[in-house]
Image (cartoon, rainbow, N blue to C red; front, top):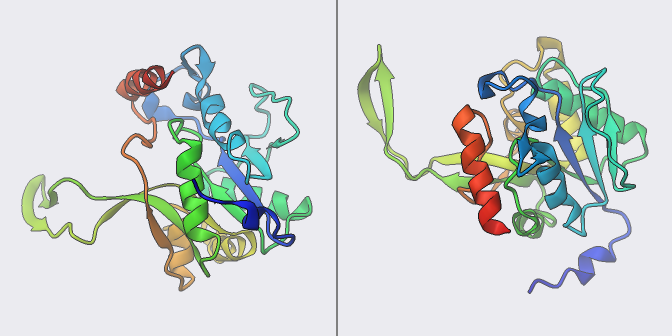
Length: 239
């Protein structure tokens, strides 16, 4: 078991989680945003929040909601709701970081940004990311080495087989210093965060090389209708 006692005594560095939860989930085919769809009779996002609450090194979990969204109510001093969601995921994350800083978070604090719809994340995986990145000068993200053969295409036909030996599938959480990530995203705010597909991409464009930390195939993002049944089956197997 990893000894976290030395980390707990560090007085100047805290770890926060930021969960963008303002999307509509249009590809999920549900009548309500997918993060509120029930899995084992519990809204999907509450499974996500439960994993972060089980991780003792996370000081605060900030859930970024769309303005006017009143679905979620949480009675927990370690979870805060901010109705500052934007038109895109990147804007919601940027607004959430701005909110954290305004509420007294230090630019040197760590933030773990995680997709609300990756409801199968576990506290063990969160701890693995923390262990790998707390002493890293940049930070990093959970990711999986690409397991399948990768094809390039032209007009719907294979044009080449791409070498997959250095290819990874990016997951979340993605863990960076609040100030550095806020600055990296701010550089693209004027263009509507064009080209920013995740937090790591913003850090890459700022000249950084995030660390890749092996994740789990089960940490997939619920996106399509069939994903709900698979996520529910995995959750049921854990209980």
